[in-house]
Length: 108
Image (cartoon, rainbow, N blue to C red):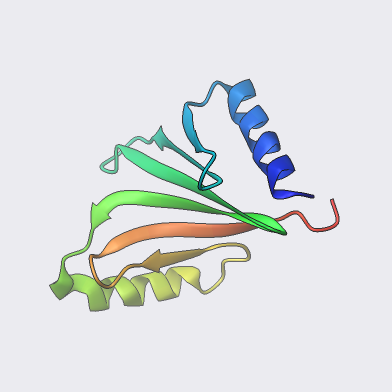
C-alpha cells in the first residue's frame, strides 16, 4: 500500500466520522485532536505516514516538572509492561507525555 493510499484511507475515515483535522500535503501528515472528560480536557493526535504503515501519536497537553520525571518514568515503564500494541513515551527535555502506536499496512 502506498503512502498516498494510506493518507486517503485515513482522510476518508475522518471525513466519514465528521472529525476535524489538518492535512499537511508537503509533510505528508495529519494533525487532529479530540476532547476527553477529566483534567486533560483534550488530546492532540498526529499521524505520521511511512512506507509500510503509519505512526499515531496521542499527545497529552500536560508536561511533567523536571523534579518529578524519575517518578513519571517509573510509572510509564510499569504502564508499558503489558501493552501489546503501542507505548507511552516521555520527552525528558520538556516532560511531554504521549502514547504512540504503529499501524502496519504491509500486505494489505
